[in-house]
Length: 90
Image (cartoon, rainbow, N blue to C red):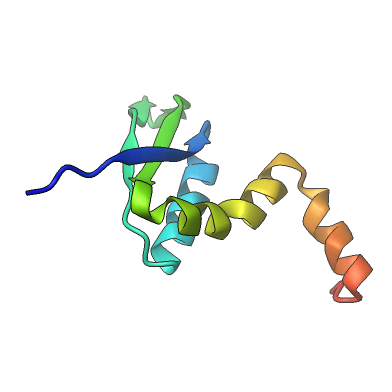
C-alpha cells in the first residue's frame, strides 16, 4: 500500500456547507475524507469545523470543482450578479 499525501481543500463550519462540498466532490468523482467530528446534542447539530481532504494528486481538480461553490458560500449574491451580467438571470 502506498502512502497518499492528503491536503485540505475546504473547511466546513456547518452541516449545510459540508453536504454541499461532499455533493460537488462526489459529482466530480473525487475521493475525499473528512477530518473532525460532527456532533449532535439532543437532536440538534453542534457545529464543529470539519476539514475535507483529497489526495495531493486530486487537489487541483477538487479546488476547481469547489471554486464556484466556495464563492457563493462566501458571498451569496455573487452568483446572482454574475448571472445578471451574463444575461442568464431566472
